Structures are given as structure tokens and as C-alpha cells.
Length: 146
Image 1: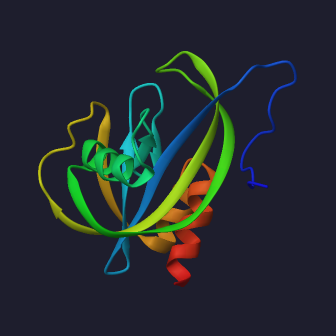
Image 2: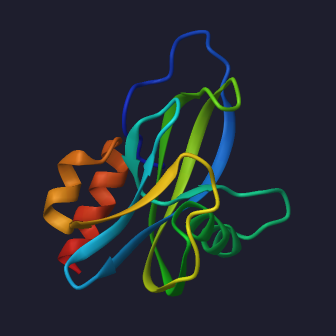
């Protein structure tokens, strides 16, 4: 059973399952996050949807780069959670299955190429209550204990 964070699914609402890969990227007591502007305006773990035929690790590398401009190394799986949400950029309701990894941020290669995403470094403890969803916050806390 995959633990759910956030709201229960709405009765009668159809949800499309969307797998995604997300990273807890720690360095020197800080964590690299992304501020997603536009329709969201929220602080998140960098990551996103796994494309058809793509492995979760490949998606993690791609998504972290797209949302932060950073490269990563030594990813290790921490766990998985799910949440039910509306995705305005796709105009659909989704059951997001979030595969969480911890990884080492290596270096910034470029500006974040994905629009409305800004990389943000924060102290681990300060980040936890500011993250948009409780699943992200849970895994940042877990990573902080390790």
C-alpha cells in the first residue's frame, strides 16, 4: 500500500495515474528546491512526470536539470507516496505517484530551462514547513535524519 498525503480523492472524480520522480538534493545542511510560479506559486521538490519509456532515474536527472539547471549524482531511492490533485497546466485530475530519491547536487550547468521554475537553496529545517505538499515535507525530514 502506498501512503497518501493530502486530500482524499473526490467521490465520482476520475483520476489519471501519473508517475513522477522527485529529488531531495542535500548539500551542507541545505536542500535545493524549486519555486514553481505561474498557476502554482509553491515551493516543491524538483522533479516531475516520467515520460513513456523513460526510467525513473532518467526522469529524475532530466527533471532536476529542467527545474533547477543543476546536475546530480549518486541518486538513491527513499520511497514513494501518492496524492490526488488537479494539474492546471494539463487541465486534468491526477493520482500522482511520487517516487522520491535522495541525490547529491554536483554543479549548476545553466539557468533552469523550464518556465516558471526558480531554484532555491534553503536550510533543511526551514524548508520542511514551507513545502507545498506534506509528502515532500515528509521525505525532506527523512533525508535530514540520514
